[in-house]
Image (cartoon, rainbow, N blue to C red):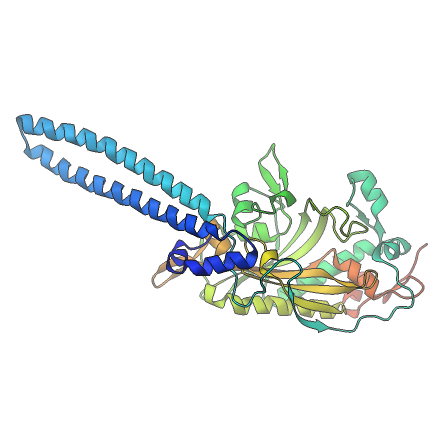
Length: 419
């Protein structure tokens, strides 16, 4: 949800943002019209209410026919005030519904366009020179690490088992990520994975991408696709203290995504699945500090990728691919040898005050209270297994273990085939 004062003061800014996203800029005119209608209805209600109060002071002083006339007028005014209040309330509801439509205001400098219009900011590391390239699923099966056939048997397509060193590797990635987060002042949190509709909607996940979300209709709860959601809801309807800097949490959770509409895209192996685990950074900060905080989250993501020795690139995601909540998003994409392309493994978004406005998260200032900014970023997830196996594979099917992960795999430096 956007600040209506910003839309009133600079409607062309929102129009430009909508154009950059490839979305309807006509919503701006509809919002302004709805806002004007609300203010007119509110003004009418306040005028009638003031007249009603003035009349009520006259009645005790009146007598006879004059008093009866005033009482009749008071009844008429009461009906008018009631109707005007109902009209003002309805205009407010219509405005609030319209205000939920536009995505966040895109930050200056974000590329316009859709999924393919990103800007590459940098490439880091050397791609491996491999004589024989196996994909992550073949390697996972050779190592006894990934079992998708039994996952499909038990749960359906796009489910899987991580077994043996596969399970150890995932736990290693997540524990390394959590250690990194704690080292940088994040509070570790194990989050709920079921949330109420107002929390899911407040984070912006029930808009254009609602079909990606699993819903338990009998309980009116949603399964989260990232711990960003429960971490955003953690301080809902609260006034928080940012006087000592950002409040940062690192959430560890299972994540669930329907992956609707992605048939045939990365369906082999564990690249695009319905369930996975993730450590997610989440930060609450002052709005004016959000850009700097966004760069800090990106730095920590890159440090993690360096620790697991992956070649990667950083992209500035185009406006049409941001999702509704983000004003800017940077993705880190690891090289995928089997497909000779880069694959997204981390993402960090600056949501400015968009989520906090919906969720009622504020800070106290010398001039009252105001909404805070929220940011998020992935520090480690199941998908990293794909990039680690493929980039560190050896000719015989064994896999080199990056030094940072060895303590989590019993100190071994090589995963060796079991079949």
